[in-house]
Length: 167
Image 1 (tube, one colour):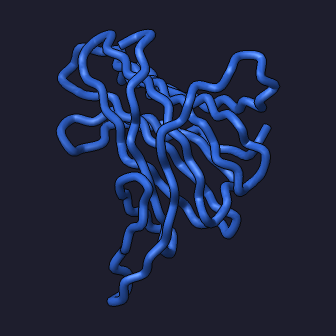
Image 2: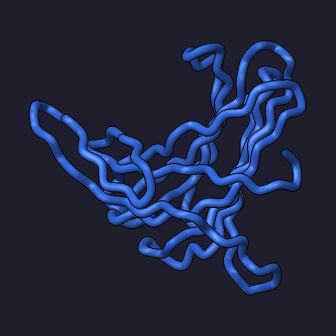
């Protein structure tokens, strides 16, 4: 799907370091220690940022090496913890091995809680998937990045992470 834009749907909320995914806009509840807690996050469609707009861009990318998955994120509009970010995800499967490549957004909020987006997948040698989304987290975004992994069925075979603050 090189050159085409698809939409990655993801939303996440964190409760005591755990993550739950929901649809857009999101409000999700998590059963944790016998009680249900609720957190909100807004994730929706993002427009492709205008080239030369002066928009700050942060890059995150990694590869699982010989296992065959590679991916990254282009993060736009990161002006502070409460900014609504425009994020372009890009994922490729570099091996014809019956496994699939997957990518998700990772966030660490201002209190150190981890938030994980839903896995987005592609399978088949040379297959690629990319898409734009917007991310805003009620707890503020301190760090953002990607986790790229290779799966065989539901078993994660390998992964890599590129996570950090605004550059």
